[in-house]
Amino acid sequence: MSDQETSTRVHAFTDDALGDLDATGVAEQIRNGAISAAEAVDAAIARAERVEESLHALRHTDFDRARQRAKTPGDAEFAGVPAAFKDNIKVGGMPMTEGSAAIPPTPQAKDGRVAAQYLQTGIIPIGTTTMPEFGWTATTETLADQTHNPWHLDYSSGGSSGGSAAWVASGVVPIAHGNDGGGSIRIPAAACGLVGLKPTRGRLRLTDGGEAMPVRLVTDSVLARSVRDVANFYLAAQRVHRNRLLAPIEGVDRPIDRPLRIGIMLDSPVAPRTDDATRSSVEALGRLLETLGHHVEPYDVPVPGFFKDDFIDYWNFLAMAARSGGARMWGAGFDPDKLEPLTVGLASSAKKRLWKAPVYIGRLLASSAASRLAFAKGPDVVLTPVLSHTTPKLGYLAADLPADEHFRRLVDYTGFTPLHNATGGPAISVPAGATDEGLPIGAMLSSNHGTESLLLRLALQIEQAQPWRRIQD
Image 1 (cartoon, rainbow, N blue to C red):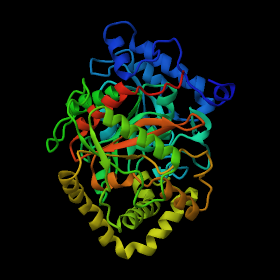
Image 2 (spheres, one colour):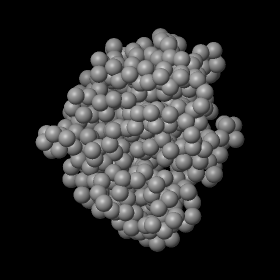
Image 3 (cartoon, one colour):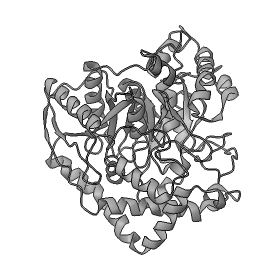
Image 4 (cartoon, rainbow, N blue to C red):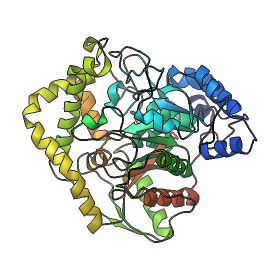
């Protein structure tokens, strides 16, 4: 590592109870008595305090309660493993501000559905992590602060689960909660060199209020440094609650053992041409998959011409709902005058197109069936970039940018991820390469509804054939 890389890269890995273990490894060490849950939690807190001045990824601390929970961690699969929640789910006793100064930091009365399911897997959250206001954008920047990428502090950690990604990538915790409404797990996973799965819609419990969304774009999940952590989290989570309409996720203890038909698409039909660095990384992954016995060939995902406008219209609609219904959703202390320019701009755009809501909502809902049919007739898996260009520097999607310019940049950057939020199908981001500056580049694998096990076993095969880069090396 060069002197310049040393000065711009930050991590918290050290010779403590966590070492360089993933969440599964930490859980095994606690289970066999090699370390205690208390030691694991204390190590995570010390790591957070060591790197927080550089990363700015912590929104609210829960250190005292984490230490208390570690005294009786229980016997669930991830019992005693330190973790974090993103600042947009209800966690009893913790504020939930959704990254917005407009929402007062009032502690929640009780755990919401998502937090309750996660806590029953045994994880111990040490705090909540940063996000951009309401998760509208693909970076974790607000008017008050910026979360830095631990691989290079000048760059974005992605968004909107960028605080969780920064903590996992830097080694503060081995696993953390995130959620994805337009790419908000896959994007920071790509930016920070992590594994991030957006599951099939309905795989986990819906967040509180999620059932009220006309199109349920948002799914909750985790960010992790290993494929097995993601797979094992879902095994634990579905023991708490399982959607009987979906095939269960299986134990991913071995890679895929049969050849797959993999379609590769390098350019998004709704964004500018993918940049050369990203393109090269995805092409290289395609060649690796061929050496592993899969059949890889060019494929154009059937995306209707109206999809881009429909998704934008619905994104704007959600911002309008947040602005106009904030007091109902977040209490009387909600202050719309403190909303950031992007939220205000999106909400204003929605009003001009509200007359078209039945059309764009109806077409987005219909995309689920269209996606199932496309996979039934097409490849087993589709390989694409996660993003249309490499991770930008902080400020490229700054919170104080004029809304129109911010959103133009955002749409051109996120050309691949929103489709799966509309259709409800699964997609996973895996590390695929690096920029000249050492920043990770991600690739995305997607498949038909309910086939997360297929994606995870394929991702495990890639991980074993081409182990991920380590930030501490």
